[in-house]
Amino acid sequence: MSKIILTGDRPTGRLHVGHYVGSLRRRVELQNSGEFDKIFIMIADAQALTDNADNPEKIRQNVIEVALDYLSVGLDPTKSNLFIQSQISELTELTFFYMNLVTVSRLQRNPTVKAEIQMRNFEASIPVGFFTYPISQASDITAFKATTVPVGEDQLPMLEQTKEIVRKFNSVYGEVLVEPEILLPDNEACLRLPGTDGKAKMSKSLGNCIYLSDTEEDVRAKVMSMYTDPDHIKITDPGKIEGNTVFTYLDAFSKPEHFAEFLPEYNNLDELKDHYKRGGLGDVKVKKFLNNVLRDELAPIRARRAEFEKDIPEVYNILKKGSDVAREAAAETLAEVKRAMKINYFEDKALIEEQSKKYSR
Ligand code: ATP
Ligand code: MG
View 1 (cartoon, rainbow, N blue to C red):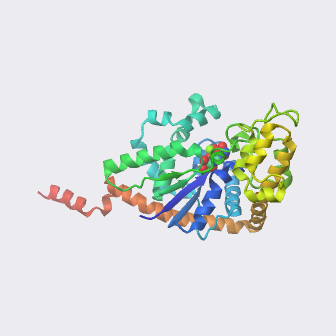
View 2: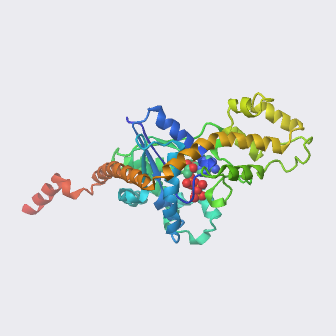
View 3: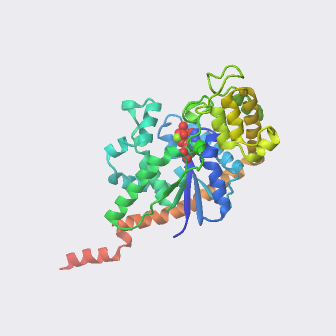
């Protein structure tokens, strides 16, 4: 069986370092591993509109931002198909058919949807499109027969829902769809990178982000004002590592060579943590180290972005070409789905013959 990747992001803002460690960094590795037959990376504008219906301009502006972020982290359009969800109408057709296989109560139990409804204060006024977006996500994944979906931890319930839809579809209509596997980051800190304010998740919607496109100065200012251990007041006080955002970021970003380069008095992160826990290590020193680590990781990304920013029409061109390839792949699956559901009337010669026989008696 072919190995196929589908993943994507909502164009509700520029991409941040949470996306980077949670998904983007892994995508680039997978892309360059040469192990995959096809890679589809989707800008999920239709999904973003499900909770931004009154603000289409925001989505339109951020499509190009996300595309630039993709290219700047090293997604390569000759290896990965970058495309825009709304341009593939086949996806909405699949969603419509899958809706018959999912109950309202099952959607209400989806923990990510629950949390997001609360975060957006939707309560009784949930747009139907938003409520059903897990079904549209199932369409995105299955349309490309994706086997592997590299995403952050918040997407686990979506993958579960997709698998259920696949099983249900295949058992009712016959084996057509492929069950995907989620690929989570292997580093705990990357599963759900917290915001700079220490809140559970760095999220575009919460305004607690370090963006991939932030300037060096922006990043420095954000790092220096980051949430640490509120009880670590004097340098000599013992400090806590758990829930200390600066250390969580170091878990996500620091590499052994960073110590040799920026903080040679420590051999590794464990030694730095031990010193902090013992007392005698100030927040400013740790933050300066984190800033150096982030600069090392983000500088090449920023430089590549600047290159792509010089030719925006070419970026749209990349998205258009990617969308053409994606449409072709989705159309193939949709045709199989319609055949399995017996709604392929005009190509079904046996059906036409059977009906004519019935009436020629
Ligand atoms: P929004 O607030 O609009 O939902 P978001 O910041 O949650 O935006 P998404 O576009 O919903 O971003 O998510 C894109 C991908 O990035 C998903 O795979 C998601 O799991 C991952 N991701 C998002 N935020 C984080 C985070 N803080 N840590 C790790 N992965 C993340
Ligand atoms: Mg999200």
